[in-house]
Amino acid sequence: MTDGEVTHNEGRHRYELVVDGHRAIAVYRLEDGVATFTHTEVPPAIGGRGVASRLIAAALADARERGWKIVPLCPFVKRYIEKHPELTDLVAG
Figure (tube, one colour):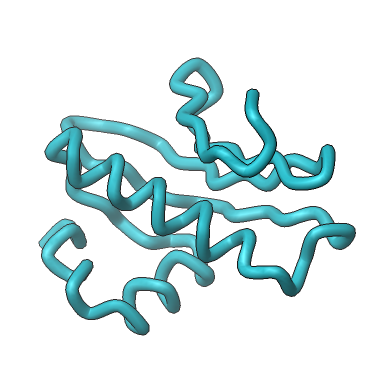
């Protein structure tokens, strides 16, 4: 995995972003085309640098590309969508 590139680890149901050798993750469950984002984790060593926002932006863009709807159970994902109203159409009704 290239440093600074968000990748989709389908086998582990998560998006990953490695920065300075530390892996941030956004975990989801997928059922019937709906991705429920349950957890976002950024190691303290790379916290406060916008890593989670980069990770979630890429994850949601990929979800859109795949035609998925999302459920933002993760508080960070929920706040991210609230700050980016152009993404609200992704949220499952």
